[in-house]
Image 1 (cartoon, rainbow, N blue to C red):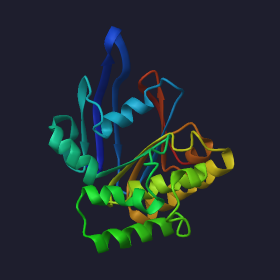
Image 2 (tube, rainbow, N blue to C red):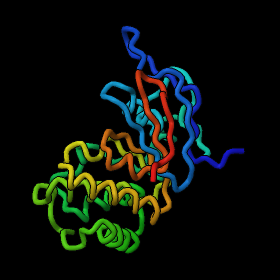
Image 3 (tube, rainbow, N blue to C red):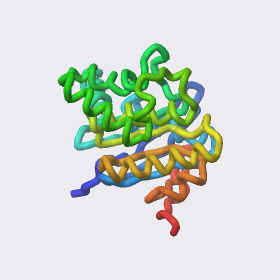
Length: 228
């Protein structure tokens, strides 16, 4: 049997008017592996990540994450999966404006009803991991774009997920900051032992990935190992 954390088989997604976003996509991702998914806008990257993360349902095919068949879970099962197994990072950061950095990171643990002492210790650890130990009380509007994405990364790891899903996490950042964020993702995958699926067109991430999948018109065109 495969030891893959993520197994996708024959995934198709049809939208109204016959638009086919994915055409029979199959892939695996293993524990501790950083997989970059690249392709032009409209190639199906976001659709694929949304299906893996249980944010959308496929027309055909199956998705299994950590032994759970995502495509057969009910809403309660999907909520459990997204809370306990998967961490999400988006291009728009998605932070709550009225909360401080530490409070934003703590939100997933509050939802999971973690012990207060455990929660506070985990928040401190994660903000230190992403280099923001001196910004714990600042709100998103007081932080730079790179700092906000670091908070978002820390929040995504709050409940110790097995899978990190990141959709164009550097899309709003300048090239220098983007490179630092990509290196941080690589470091966090190693230190936290998570599997990461990252959709990007950023060469700085592609160079750090263990594998690169190229999507074109909803199909995997090419797969390559990391160079160098």
